[in-house]
Image (cartoon, rainbow, N blue to C red; front, side, top):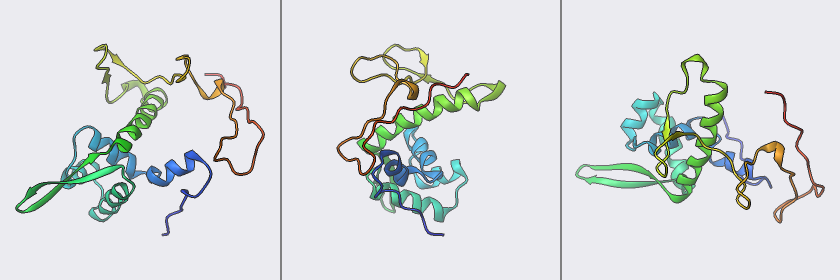
Length: 164
């Protein structure tokens, strides 16, 4: 099956999906983020086939999300580490965690908790405006054309917040 290419679209969401939109990629990133960095460890943790894992790791390295580093020369062995680009993608994963904890965790609650280094408290990610630091949700913004926009030039106002 041929992989759909989203990278050429004039859309930051599509371009991001081009890099990590395949379902195994965010899970591989999660594993590397928490310290599961060697091929065999990742394969065992995810239960992923060697072929698929090899393809995903190659793609993530080619896209500068992960770096392949040798940790043993005899025999040659490698591990995977996050690049700066990959570490920033983990911020996106934290937003996904917040949504998953709220909407899919069920009565058991979240499977993992996150302690914030700055305050030492168990917390979750909150989106804030980079200018005024106020909370920022999809219903609080207006989408305007940017310099890389191709096509639509009118502002788009997302629908108002649904009940919930």
